[in-house]
Image (cartoon, rainbow, N blue to C red; front, side, top):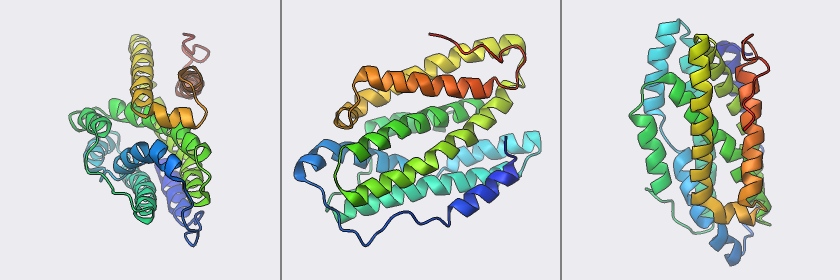
Length: 248
């Protein structure tokens, strides 16, 4: 488990990486565009959040636990997400498609976050979305022959695994501060929230997921694997729950 200062160093170093060859021209068919455009536009919008509400929640939390470096680490995490949004936006510009300003799914997720000041729910929400993002961007990568778009997706996928680790470590700290009863209740809440959110994402972007080779069954199987890994990480430091991944 990294400290907040170690995460700051990681994000600063990762920001120096250049994995996309922008000299490449987009090479995407109209059929591919019709399949992925809605999802590409929606996720581009989601990735460009200014993170203001998250930083407000993080600042309150960091002051409570006396870990002010966590604020900077989160700001760098948000900046990395915005990089993804900027890259996707640049791609939309280059294929002559508009960046949208509103999307129902994005609006719903933003409302869940904006009206919540609880650090645990914030962290859980981001963890679930980042988990679906891994499948989403792999599906987009597999649904196109465009080398530039594939590189953009690969760059995001490389970033997503550490993003999940960053959020999961924080969720573990919060989880392990609970009583035994609190942990039992939390695990049930995590399960319902995780798979409800996964299903919402599937419904919104099933065309893209299917184009990338995922049926609903495959998608949920992958999400179940991700969920079990996350819960194992969260409960790793808890003697009561060390071997108790919920087997649903």
